[in-house]
Image 1: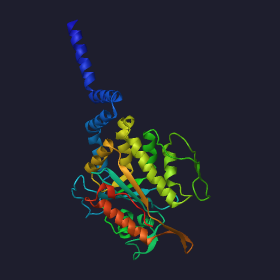
Image 2: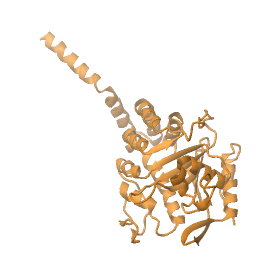
Image 3: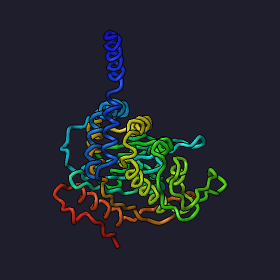
Image 4: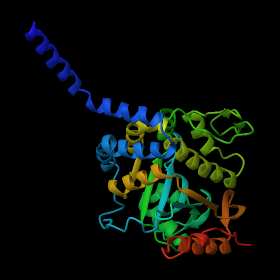
Length: 338
């Protein structure tokens, strides 16, 4: 009888050894459910480091793609401001690959602030390195020369250096949003894509949560104006931040990173991305948004967005101020150029 009891105890111990991480994670979640917000954040950070960091780093290593052979990022100061060009690609079957979204970002980790400066996709700009630097729509730079030509073109336009880039395939957003259980979007009127040469869809207004496909249609809808379109893209980024940092989505981080990694290319090393992810857990960054201004124009029967030269100069000054580590937080607000 005693022998049987000993075998039974050993069998139970062996079974328990197979699931220690699940048990500890379960305790973390139960404790968090009954604690205050601050304690939840501390537990979230513990769970992040204990269970997900190594898996995330391994996934992100496959996403690391330098711009060229000379692009070897040096270790910068963790709290130093840095620039990041966000390139959203949304290739359709009938279209060449182009950058559907261009956002020049400045991240100030120490102040937990982020600048999102949108560049309209149809902006008339010099495409650096293509046919003697011809002028065309800025989103064509990606089609002609990929990330390298896009970076050179944006640097030439804004006269500011880009330290990092990140290309994101918008198709991956569908799975990410659905994995997070949807996302909140401020849609107060039905959005209907109805032009004959556009994919047809309708996004109903005033829904509490929107699916991944609805979110994708929300950010790529372009039948009103580039101004509204880029505003929707920045709104979506903010709402996605809010959704990811909720504690209820803590156990889904591994899936989100895996999906994101499959649709991401960047020259930012995994350790830096993980540091930024940890900062997001502590507090969502305060986002300041701006879009380059201009006017509509037709050239040889083709639509372009002609950027205002004074506004481009103003954007250059704003970026410079944000990249300067000595700039006071109170001086980061944007007073738009007249």
